Image 1 (cartoon, rainbow, N blue to C red):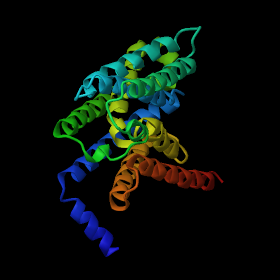
Image 2 (image 1 turned 180 degrees about the vertical axis):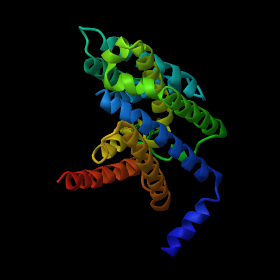
Image 3 (image 1 turned 180 degrees about the horizontal axis):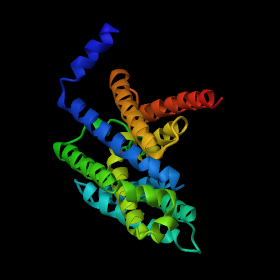
Image 4 (image 1 turned 90 degrees about the vertical axis):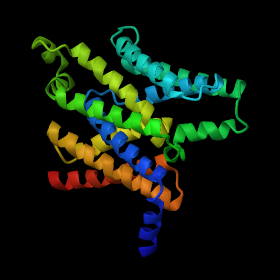
Length: 281
């Protein structure tokens, strides 16, 4: 135990480790807030779809050899979120079908571009790292850290400022419209914020594991707590603790960061599910 503490203290002296912990906590916090909303609106799969869109945009940036790929990935993912919202209201193309179309299409096109216009000697390794997360969270630049901090503050402020309206739109959209709330505007706001968080989370858990970061903390909290505010708070605590635990374990034992965080989320979900069963008896 002493050796683990000493090793962790040694790693904490490096700025990139501190950056990883700060970014990981902030992304986990924002993801948990959005996760509760998306799960309750039965739109939780949007995270997976947008993450694949972000992967496709990343592939385009890599082919064009753009060093700051966030300048392409962010706007493309935001536009995709808006399109998903519009397509979900189309009677011919339902929301789940629209997500599936964009998800599979973006993933296939991105991988195809990376193979045809390869700019790396290890395409498969780069793709695997992007999809499942690797050490990118430990190679963050100062600009990426500040971007995450500023974006996270904006997301938290928006959530707190519009809490009542988001609550109304989440539980009963028709009632919210009847009472004068602009439900479409708040749905659009939720979609855009989700897209931004998805792009930031790619460095933490990878494209394929982002949905787990969004969904599992919310589902875990719902196993035990039955009111909206309690679920939001509990989900945030679970998400932050799992992110911290996952990053620390990954640093100490050289495991994949994204997969370790998701494994922690899964373990907590089963624990809360058992607690929920015992409480209801």
